[in-house]
Image (tube, rainbow, N blue to C red; front, side, top):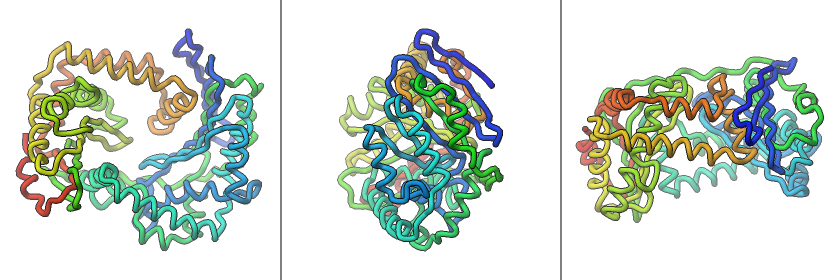
Length: 435
């Protein structure tokens, strides 16, 4: 067992346990809150899929709410949570799937009961599977009609192509239409196992005398077999790439940036987070000032640095007038070039660092945020850093490290552009892609 305290004033701490069946449990008692969050994470997502079952992780996440042996109807699950004013939801990413309930602390055991029930005891009624196919297809249609969401899917596609990292998490309509119940059950039984799973209980734990034993009670029957591992991502890019999706939109939506970094590569990841903040992480950042404030070209513009266990990128994104799309691309590239050339100073660096530290502090004020913060680190990185440790690492990044990282990552051969707008040819945009 491991116990860490990271803020004595707020009495935040966590303890990590491993149950006899191998399932990891993290308990994070919090003072001054009336809530409890029960979160079950499992290390599987779209990167673990093959082409013939692309989208199965997300489909399974939906189907877990469609009935269990104890709660045979979907309504039976939601009624219990609604009756206590709680929240229940789930999510799927490339590398993990999560189910959580947030409720008043008096209902902590109920939350664990329901979360374990839907994750481990779902029965996947055939009629519900057929209905949910339509729900998933309409979800896909919705994102296809939302350019801000669609361009993010195009971004993954241009970065990684025809491999799991480049496929949409939601899957494709034809595959969803034909996915068979035995395939879904087989994937669930293989991937939802003790070695792959993690339970986090965060918040006011005062109503549970022995929380570890309560978790063990509800998760004792989790499968112990090993699941399917994900294949490594293949990186092939040697020149700038552009993917243009022609659509009659009122606004051009674009993402432009560079491959680089991963959760495991901390020496690159942390400098990229600082550079991203500097570029477009807040209202006084470079991209916001140059594109929105000075020229009025965008309502939304900013940057993001995003990382998985084996992939990563830093990119700018914006929605701009169709007739100003090339100008916006050039303006972003101009700022990229300045960063590559090391044209930033200590004051700007300190502001970016302080912004990252401040944002993380703000984001860790609720039980669900604490559960996610602890759980995702443990699941994806096999270690947990406290906020203070992360703050220290951010502060310790030197200007020379930022310049070295920028010079390495901000390279034309790593440059990519995904764009949605009323454009037929990509070559006119591809010609712009150099710094």
